[in-house]
View (cartoon, rainbow, N blue to C red):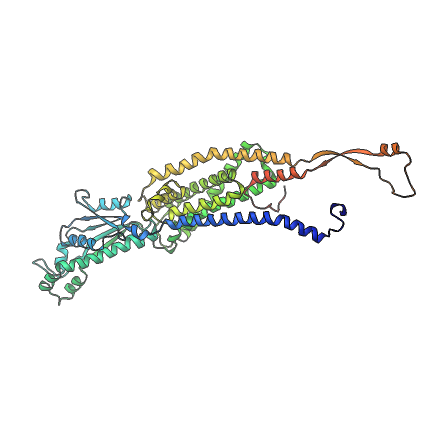
Length: 485
């Protein structure tokens, strides 16, 4: 070993010289990763935050239907109230004629099919019933039905936003309608009604009441997870399973022991089975914590199938991504894929800037739309768009993943060949005692005693290339498992 360094070079000095040699490239590589990761998280999270930037100014994009089946003072009070609350932070009320919606069932259908986020209509005879409750006129009795309005909405559609932006604003409109009624009619009622009568007084204090029709009440606390965590976890599950599958495949060298066609078929079957069971588990924990949510076995099976297709698509996407992206940039691609998908389901597009409508093309958004339709018992039908988009992802990704498996197999074979040692000829001297008293007098005799031996000796460059190729073939993967083939 002393021949490898100057006589005066101590091990400490050699270590110091080596450290100086790697310090600069080490810091340079670290700085690149430092900067790239900052840009990654800055860009991805800026995208997520931008989806709801100034969202309160886009509440007006929620469209409410209004139909007056009474044609009296209650309907006028609703329109007056809307003029007072109208603005960017309040949903748009769209009055329609009875000719367009001849009966309340059609109003309900307009909300059910997703044309409107909610609807309000004035019940037939609302004005007459209110007059009767106030004891005004010949028909006044002091008691009558005060449910002048009916409000329809769907609590299963983005539950958190439906509760805060749809139902809450509908309640605010009902309260504003009451105030508008007082402005229009309070002086007349005070002069005409018998306010000493308790029933009449109660009717005067609360003249406009509403009946709520929630197409699918979704009041359980876990509802906030349906369009957030429950859309992220299926994506992560596929990435972790792919790491496990690749790690086990590397341990058993399946890419070199079987043809690429068999490997492609095997991975397709395994991925299908895994996503099938994983989708069942996902649906299971949604159902397990549903509380009093009114969903049944039919919705369970349909939700299972949607999650299955959704997971299968994500597995295929990760198969493609991890094959063709550089190893250094796979984490960037995975994180970005997860965040842009969950950003498409966190909030309704009505609250997002128009740029984010491109996310209609993402599988997460369409999967959630299908789930809302299932949970709403057929309402909010998006089949015409959601299924074609999701199956397009599946149809396009399947043949590409076959090519990916073929590429992995070829790369694994190249790695195996590169790891094979190369035969080199080395000389070995005859073994014997190296005694000063013993000498070989004849040089020819000494050379004849030498033997030429061929040994397998690995070359460092080939070893590095083999490791690089094996990483390409089996990346991403867990560390080797304890079981050996």
